[in-house]
Amino acid sequence: MANISGLVITYNEATHIRACLESLLKVCDDVVVVDSLSTDGTAEIAQEMGATVRARPFLGYGPQKNFGLPFCRHVWVLSLDADERLDADAIADIRSLDLDNSAHDAYEFRRKNLFHGKWIKCTSWYPDHVRRLFNRDKARFSDLQCHEKVETGNSKQLASHIIHYSYRDYQHMLHKLNQYSSQYVEDNVGRKKPISAWSPPLHGLFAFLKNYFLKRGFLCGFDGFTISLLNALGSYMKYAKLLEKQRYGSKGEQ
Image (tube, rainbow, N blue to C red):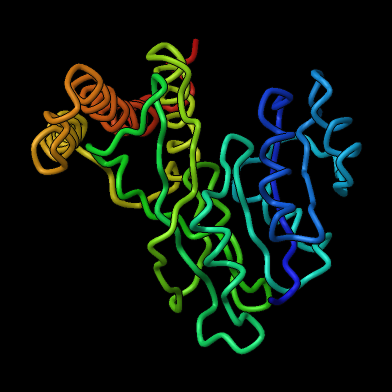
């Protein structure tokens, strides 16, 4: 098995960071944590567990992760969010990979999103493919504020899983959707093509139909309906905020 560096970005993740690093250390002999000036002891826990910790104000998910790459000792990097863990099948897959002779620049995993104590197997939450293991000499993160991705045209999907302890409750989900929609505006405010007043409702409607019907959210009961509805709201607000920014600029903030 090739040597692998783990990479995590954090802000006040004392609840999650220990279990996340324990998971990474099952396949990594080097872990880098980029901490956004946490005040709850996150950095201290990471240092106690042997991670290399670098403090930096948060500049967006993509830039924050790219900042950590030069501190990784190895060419192959495994990036997890603090609220994620490697499932047993992912650990087995990673250990079996011949990364030194790999024909691929990156590998993707299926993500098990847990909510209200159970695995949500419907809506767009599954299978939720995430590209997390990659060769940093051939791939890097996009510089997006939100929903950054490892950029490469040569990746392979694995059938194994990453476990994601997602939102605590609906209120937490609403808070994050509001944050993500604002970050989407920052990433797209410079786009040349203006959007119309039809964009927010059409994107919101399509997101609901996709999640509830095409992705079978109706099979997950009340959670499936609510997740579909909130995903639709998140999609609506991305375009509504971007339309607001294009029409009114900073005037809407007064």
